[in-house]
Length: 328
Length: 277
Image 1 (cartoon, helix red, strand yellow):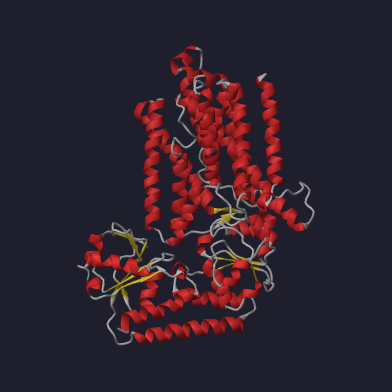
Image 2 (spheres, each protein chain N blue to C red):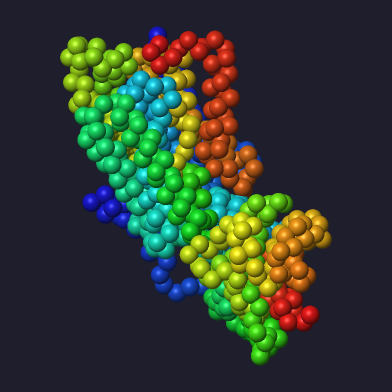
């Protein structure tokens, strides 16, 4: 029954991607086979890479959100709870403030700085959690939140002391977005997303048991500490890879796993694939809306994810599904 | 190794930047000040696309829109088939994407009045319109020379340019040294009341204003409806020298937020306020 639902979700995700590639400004529909050179460049250089990146980013963020919610047994955990996003943003902000401009293989230099910032934040949070209490979940959570606040303050300071150019560029980065050209940024994100997703989908039983409790998981043979470290590393690096290219896109990692729990239940064997498919499709759909609704002006996708996902999520909760919390 | 793979993937897109550059016929502007400079240089008829923030000269309102100033739509850009996109340093993150689309770019710098004048010349050179651009740039330079003459031999008043003021003066932003507004003050013959350039546009409180006590205060309130009402609000701070001597001036013109040719000419208005009393 649940695997049949996943087949439908897979079909829906493919359909969403195809429609997103076909949708043009103002809702015009173009063929998947371009008719002239301009249309061909739009589809192959702009729209297709953007849709692919949207799917990868959405899938990665939703899967990371699902994993963190299980790791911390906390419904409010998101891919950004552990400071990865603020680390990446700080890396990008410092890069912009330094006045360096450059790119490698069509990827702006700030993406590499953001990746360094994300990895730095992950290492810092890990070191604090490890030193303070031997990698307990609550210390990890607190360290992540504290690092996140600290980095956010530094970002604001960098933005405040910067000139107009710096301020604009940092502000634009913080809005997030999927506006890419060519497949190089997609290839930049691909290894992070793919490795992270494969690891997290490979440990559904461990995630299920962690949700019940660490002691109970240990009693059933789960190497709790090693699994926690694996989840932390896989999800954080995956999010770091995504944020370095797309900026901080909110709400996907929070909403999609919860919708999955409501529709399919809390088991990670189905929740994992659902998060990949629905997270990817959700972000692609939100980006298509932001791209066409007031074209050619584009609304950053993070605004759409919150505007669309928020009310939808709340409506589902109000309709009596509130009992499906993180533990099912 | 991954970077190497990436560079192989995009290798075909970056090599288009080299080689002989053809004279651009279809130009897209990514900023309001760039649009104004393009028209100033006599290149208006070649402009085929502008941003949603471009409002001047009025004919640009009829031109195709390529989206926001920092958020252009790459689809709209490609559809216009431009052979030149003119950008500012703010677009540093957009530049590699335009390169990947094999669209040539020209980056201008509007962070000083001289930079604005130089950008007119740079556009003329790039677009094969040296004569009209040199004439326009020459006119702007002559204008600035006349402005500088107005203050020759006179003491330089301490001027504060501010914006974004709350009605109760709880907070306002001021232009520090190093900004285009600071350059406007200096070109007009004044000196910036703010001396530290650590923060480009710091926020000031009433206490900060009283400590600075500038000789002249110029408030930019672009787009606000009633300059006289805003001016009257300053009377609440009658301990300030500029308020006591009637040297607070409020301007609400839209172009004050666009560092283009009109901004350069505005130096004359400031110089008159400083020296023709």
